[in-house]
Length: 77
Image (cartoon, rainbow, N blue to C red):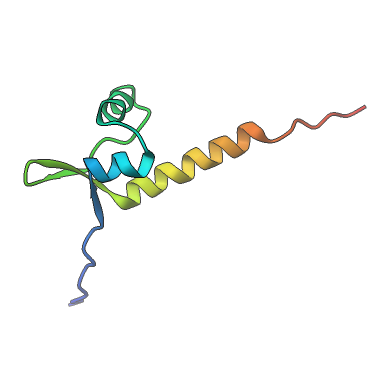
């Protein structure tokens, strides 16, 4: 039997997420409602929390999207 211990999840509170993305709580929940930002991954002591890995995935996808949209078009003559 494998008895490896799992590392505790790194999570952020709503306030920490707002600080990380420099937005208000209202803007955060508006983006969640519009499906433009990941929903909280759980609750701890009646407070919503986000798993940092989910936010890192979101950051990566947004960076890829921004990079893709800024690639210059190839022009052939």
